[in-house]
Length: 352
Image 1 (cartoon, rainbow, N blue to C red):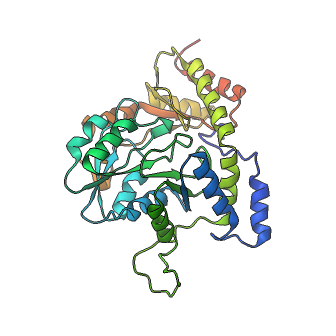
Image 2 (image 1 turned 90 degrees about the vertical axis):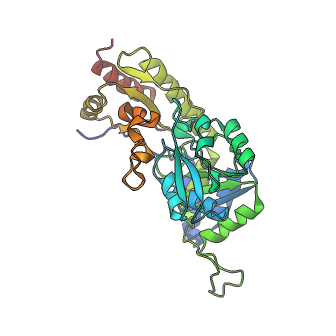
Image 3 (image 1 turned 180 degrees about the vertical axis):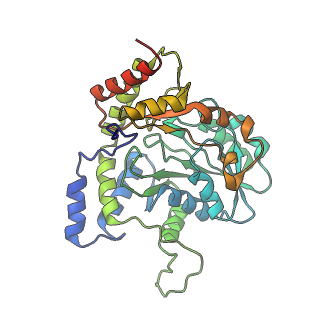
């Protein structure tokens, strides 16, 4: 059966088309178009942060942040076990080593386990706000202060939570709360870090562009077409967040008390509606037959082939990975759509 209810779908009901048309008709469709700068300014303003540096992806944003901090070979960065693998890869791309910390029951990094993983080589902590739940940032920031570490917040799944670390990194992939199809942005109050990230994202050209490059840079620029879509999305962020909280509420009410479903803790913002499901694979197959797409939780980083560690079967992250799933979560999901999805879940478990 064709998928009628995808896990995610972008909401394009604002000025996206108008801004893309402006970019095309202006002739400035590369990174030098005005829409990229306007997006950087708007998103930084919304988050009460001084500087925004747009780039080509969320992975690029994390890589730029780490590079701007001077992190590289021989260094270590604390990364959660429960995250998308790009968080760890960004550390590896710099030549540094990701060191993994297990999650709490809300899927966020467990701050009580961080200090045991800190060594003289540790340079930063990378908390990830999984599925829109804010990490225990007060404690993370205390630990960072005590050990003189940088904090790079991974906000790929949590647009709308206000950042507190040295750099906040966002993805704008098509399934994110706001999107540009592809893209990312770094936010920081540190003018030096902002300058370094902007420098590195654009081939690390010297000021006179004499083609003598003094450091390794990247082609991580955001195009004006992406910037146009991102700007229109950023202008609607409060509307989008409000709609998504209502989606969370309807799922919570409709699935509460279903024997076989365990609801997850409340989210600060809703990226994906996650839950734990008995007979998960059977449930997902049942929903797929009804045209409802699902996704399963991330695998722990220590289970990944390039980071394999024999401790992975005993991790809290492994326990959640075994039965966690996402239901369709997108801004334009209607109450009728949700009633249908909830009904199919309830029917699978024999709930009235």
